[in-house]
Amino acid sequence: MAKSKSTGNHLSALEREALLNTLQTRFEKNALRHKGITWDAVQERLDAAPGKCWSLQQMEETGGEPDVVGRDEATGAIIFCDCSAETPKERRNVCYDAEALASRKEHKPGDSAVAMAEAMGISLLTEDQYRHLQELGEFDLKTSSWVATPKEIRKLGGALFGDRRYNHVFIYHNGASSYYGVRGFRGRLLV
Image (tube, rainbow, N blue to C red; front, side, top):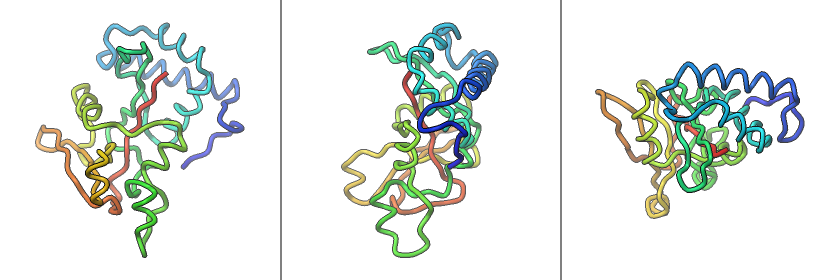
């Protein structure tokens, strides 16, 4: 994973300003993703939770192109999600979780989707969240993204991933220890 020049989990003032400019430009360019939400509302939430900028910077540095995709109805939090056309490049070639990584005897990938997401301070999209994202645009036309897998499926060794093919969103299953050069994960962050 790309490292920020910041120390710990905080951005310098210069890094924060650059990130906010990038996020605002993307926000304004993709207004259909967040109808009824203003940049001022987003800025206010980010100012109140400066630690969240570090996670957004990690999303940005790994190719996720985070953008606002809605507001959490229960808490009022702004929802950021990876909106890169394909699954983020610096998060590919990973198995599903640490248990899957440990189970591989040879040809282990460098990391797992769940562990990387946790280290970045974000969560994997659920199946419903992935489908919602796909309503806002066309994503993963050539790649696929691991999605949060229900415990019942994971207990049996499986994990879920999604993509878009033939103008349709598919959710599939695979062994959790599998990994491919075109499969990564998309993250979500509440601010």
